[in-house]
Length: 141
Image 1 (cartoon, rainbow, N blue to C red):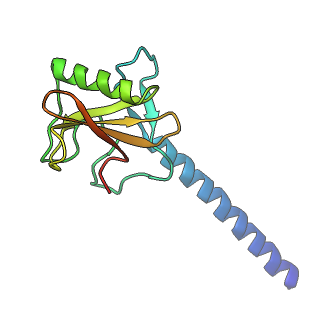
Image 2 (cartoon, one colour; image 1 turned 180 degrees about the vertical axis):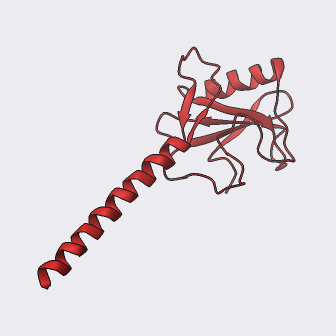
Image 3 (cartoon, helix red, strand yellow; image 1 turned 45 degrees about the vertical axis):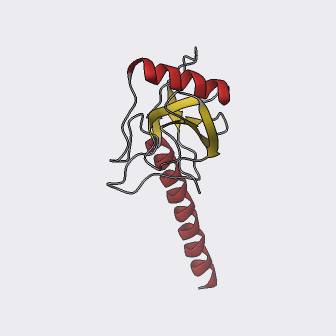
């Protein structure tokens, strides 16, 4: 009887581990999104850091190249190029996620970047495209 219980417990544990590994693999695959890079990089895809996980159903994709807040707008054209170039000079070897207006009142524009280690940094700009600051993550904490 003890052997049957231990055997069943072992099979249950193995099944849970296998199911968990499959869930993690599926979550990581779902996190892959396109990103914009002004640098001469040929890598146009990025993977969201695993500690951020997958957004819940209906939630905005924070790694989207388009603005996820309704009170902010994507920057386009030459202004976008200026912002992305300046942001990459501030945070070399990063990949641009998006350039947008800043509705938090601290800056006119912001560029969200992803470093090679998967962390996110935001570079803020004034109306004249001058860097006014940087902070870790998407939003000031």
